[in-house]
Image (cartoon, rainbow, N blue to C red; front, top):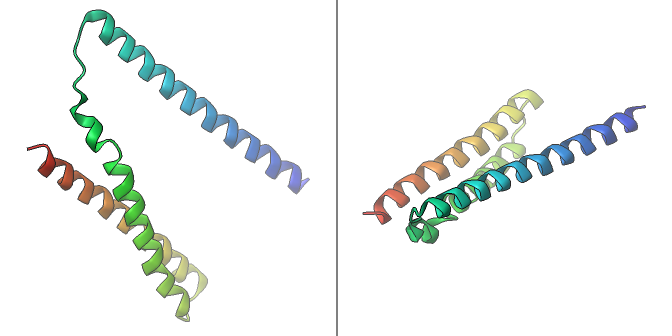
Length: 109
């Protein structure tokens, strides 16, 4: 019964992810189509910074994983270790997003 629940949750998550991606892609397509029909020019300047946010977040998460691996060597309780590990990963991920914001702000001047 436990395996059946895990399979159900996994399939539900996959379906939810596919639906979310479809809805976002469809919405973006409809917006671009409407803008083109109205003759509004879409500035292509943002294309050079398209993946800056994702790259900085992933880089921050990677550094967070690296730093949090230090906490696994300490003799901490399981709850404290989990808190430090996840906290470190999230803090460095957020730092990556903040760095991406400042880089984007500087490059758009």
